[in-house]
Length: 157
Image (tube, rainbow, N blue to C red; front, side, top):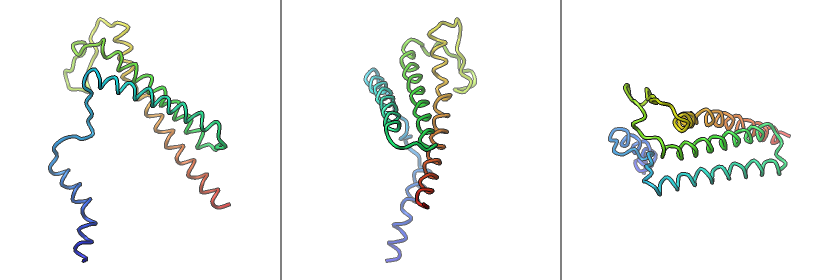
């Protein structure tokens, strides 16, 4: 009986070890086949933006006025901006070919070749979408921390 209990408890660890030692496919990678995959991905950006707008509207309509909820609204604004930038970048990718880039030292040293056009520059700036996603996640962290603290204070009262 104890053997079964121990085996049952160890099974997630054994599964993780097996996947770590014998990796096959990277299941997190999602490829987008053309053109349906791109359409679905772009629609996901639109729905995500709409969801963030609805969340901001819902928070403003509710009685949630603590600082954590304000941080959550800021997170939503950054996520909306990230979605707009990512959507634009995906759209511009159709106009920029891979021959416009040089990769001498690998992916991290990718450079945009001249002559620089407006489309290339906009595409380049849309690749800096982490400037919106990282602050969004930071404000999400602050929001979760603030909401947790305010709920703990309410329980004490």
